[in-house]
Structure formats: structure tokens, C-alpha cells
Image (cartoon, rainbow, N blue to C red; front, side, top):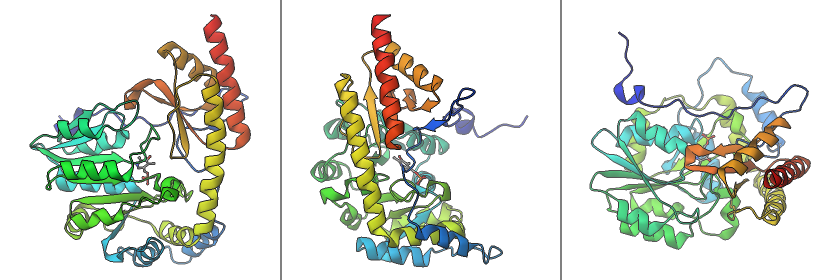
Length: 361
Ligand SMILES: *Cc1c(COP(=O)(O)O)cnc(C)c1O
């Protein structure tokens, strides 16, 4: 009999977004944290130029992309590693540092792929309770075990959208053993950059790394490019387990063009956060629990599970898809990616109507 490795056979399939609009309705997907805006106009020329030599392998060392990232963020290009999305880098970290004898630790409402990556290696995953949708540093420190190898922390978090200040991240780092790797996944870091609390300097510690992506603020989710700022020893181990030609040529060239156009990306963040904050205000007027978001999405918590599923069903019947959060341990929550203003307006109206119907039912 053909059998998967036991740790794989035990895994549930990754829960992908379920997006099927009812007949006659336009699909409005607010479910995958894609950018509300197309990428920089320079990106389409970059992609077109990739069509000139498709017979050649891409640069396996992402040389120009690393140089551009290093220049923009004032970093050492030798410590930058690029991935086929940052998911590629999360998986590489798990493969390089976890096995059945170790464990990864995550906050309770962490990004689900941390669990997937950990399970692939047969390592245990320890999920630590959060406090009011914020990562609880004291609880994390109390939960660390002798076999903890990696702590995965998305900051800002997904799906919560909340963020730990630098001082709290430092306190977490200081309280963990030195041989525990702290992964700071800043997939939404660009939306919090105005707070001027960069984390890249923690890489000097040798046990802490920062991941970023081109999928969110740069609007390149379809091209699959992420990057990490990683201590040299960890970088060397990751590369052993990575696909040596992981980022296709269009992705590399598009990311270079997008990174060079910082003004455009900043404008995308400003547009996104303006729409986000208007939407969040409307939800709060409906007396929903809405944590402060530092991302391109808004989490909303309903009074009851029944209210949450009634609202989700009402949205779906209009072709609007938010992301239910049962998989992140928040079955009474929906997460709305920030979309066009008129789509957010429509979503808010459907939510309001569904709540009033549910209350009177
Ligand atoms: C979207 C997201 C990612 C990854 O995305 P890629 O498209 O693979 O770069 C990683 N971490 C978090 C927390 C995310 O929300």
C-alpha cells in the first residue's frame, strides 16, 4: 500500500479560500489580503522584459533584487534571502530546524501556515493563548519548553491585525533561550513602517530573523516573492533545503521594479489604511468588536457564533466573501480584506442588515 509519511497523512488539507458567487452575482473577494491596488506601473514593463529569455533559468542568488532591497532598507545584501512567497521561507525554516524531537511555538490565533510548516516536519506545535486578540509575551515565555526550537510570530498578526510594539518583541526575545529561533513575520510590516520601529537590527543577535513579502503592500501576490533578513548561519541552512531556482524571472524583475518605486507603495498603504479605518469605524458603530488593525484587513468579532454565521451567509448570498476564522481559533470572527471603497460600503451594509435581522429573529 502507498502511504504518505505519517506526519503528512495526519495533516488536514490546507484550508484555501472558497470563492463561488451565486448565479448572477458579481464575485467580491475580500478574503485573501490581496492589495486593493494594482502594483506600480513600472511592474508591467518589468514582466514584459522577462518574456525575452524564458529559456534561461532565473538568477538563483536574486542578486539585483537583494541589492535593491538592501539599498531601500539600509541592510546588508548578503543577509537577504528571497523566497517563492514568504511561505517558501517559512517552510525552509521548518525543514531546516524542526523534526520530531522539537517543537515550534505560536500564538493561539497565528497564521495557519506556521502550523502546516511545523506539521510537515513531525515537530509538535504549541499554541499559546492570546489576551484580547493581542499576543501575550508573558504567556509565550511561560509556555516555552526545553524542546522549543522556533517561535513564529507574525507582527502585525494575521488574522488579528494587532501588533506588538518593539519593546514587547525585545522582551520576548530576551526571555527566550538563545538557541530558540525567533521568526518575525512582517508580511504587513509596510503598513506599520510609519511607526518607525524597524526590527532588522535584531538579526545581529544571530537567532532572530525578519520576513517580508511583495504580496501585500507591493501588490504582487500573483508573482510569489518574499524575502527575509536572516543571520548568516541560519541563511546557509535554509538554502540547503530550498529549491535552488525558487523565484521565476518575472517575479524577480517585478519585485525589483516595485521595490524601486517606494512612493507608489507608500501611496498604496495610505489609500488602504484610509479605507480600512472608515470601514472599521462603521463596524464599531454596529457594536462589533474590532481590534486596531496595522494591516490591509479588518477582523470583526460577533456577539455570537450564530450571528457570525448569519452575517457570513448573508454576505455570500450577495457574492461577497470575507474569511471565516475558525481555523485560527476564532469561529466567531470574520476577516475582511480592504477592497475598493464601494465594495467595503456594500459589505458594511450587508453586515448591518444581517445583524438587524438576526437580532429580531
Ligand atoms: C500573506 C502572508 C504571508 C505570505 O505570503 P506570501 O504570499 O507567501 O509572501 C506570510 N505571513 C503572513 C502572516 C501573511 O499574512
